[in-house]
Image (cartoon, rainbow, N blue to C red; front, side, top):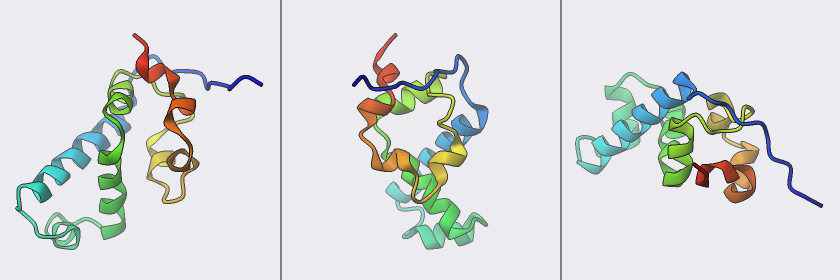
Length: 105
């Protein structure tokens, strides 16, 4: 039984790109010690803690997956809304099966 691959978009999703940029910015602020916790950062940046936590989770994606998103090579079904869900099926599945296109040119 062959794995089914979702259709691939040709252009980066602006909302996803913006969220990734924010996520890595906020993670850098934590890493540099500007804030001691995500709760402190959320209050200072006027964000809900749950939203910030969901954003920061995006920084845990493998580099090749982030690159695929930035290049617009994610499956059409993989949106920011889907990735921000706490129980997203994409966080529970092995990435190689979901995005084999991340390693293609």
